[in-house]
Image 1: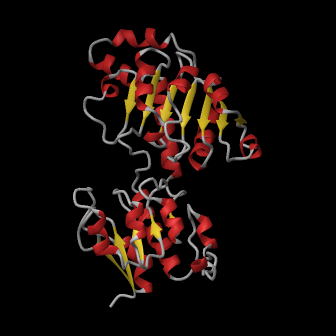
Image 2: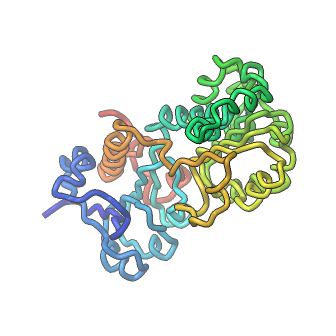
Length: 345
């Protein structure tokens, strides 16, 4: 009999892989401590609790883990997410319950930064429009169109949030000769200036930037932080890039900004909701480039992400603190006071 019961929220239709080795990467760390992984088959609150109420740990999936679900857990010691964002988990409820919530904030930084820069360059150089011109017999129209735009060298890039990905984007953009601004009320100015990035407030960033790149996580504070007021502050030649979270942008306002010419174009890897309705007007606009939330994808990313989830759960079940925790205040609760800090031993 297994020592620990780890429930994985794999809901039918979520598109996850299957087979006997499905959780082999997570089990590299969980197997040696005597844990087993069992899938949750229901996404209803009662169905979930019938299966998972006695779980020692949860691996979160694409289905919302609500307060009622978390409150009903009897033994759970950790909830682990295999992504940077934890918007599918009621973190406040987990904190109140004394359950640390882990994520993987540093596993696919380079991939997302590469994708952000790709969208920036493709949007700036009107890649899709040029591709259509080449295919539609309008070969001679491409150069006259681009002759209206300034060169990238010397333009200003504004980064909303200055976490790991934004810093990696700054490193990539600097050799292109771009001036870089950043807004992040939770990051000290020296962390920006030592990278040659100028700290500014949000309004100044929007007014001064030729290209704005969104990297904020989805929280109650950042929900729809880019709305009509913010898009109106940008110029008619400005571009907007989002590889963070779709919900940080009020999509109707962004659509209106494009339709009425407040901004020139957008490059998006995230939308709200996802996938988008096929009647979404963004899908028909020539000045919009959309990729299907794939910025983090690479051959390296998924195995590393899954191994990290297994290691985080194994650390907590072994009485240690995880490497990454989005609610560290939970450490002060009575049930966790005797826990050992994370270490490699």
